[in-house]
Image (cartoon, rainbow, N blue to C red; front, side, top):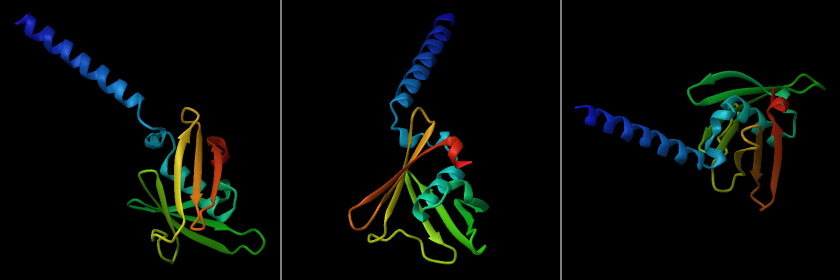
Length: 141
């Protein structure tokens, strides 16, 4: 009986070690836990709109859709956006408006860099060009 218990403990420890090793090799874009969806959406919409992510405010969350607003300082016009994350892709829409997910729309993606301390947003435009912005965590909030 003690041999069986010892073998079970040995196998469990090997499983834990293998799991930890496998997780350490995951691409950084899968480590989205280091940046909350709110931070990713704020940075993505800010990149798309050419604004400071601190000016983007999450006003509501409905399931996996985040609603964000930006108040334009010159006239206090309120822009409202919707955002959702699927894998390392960010899909967005004006609210109201259609989701930007057709083949001819820009493709927005993100990746986590710098040991989880930086977020890069890439906006791949339909003309083949790309806009990239790199954000430190403290630049988003």
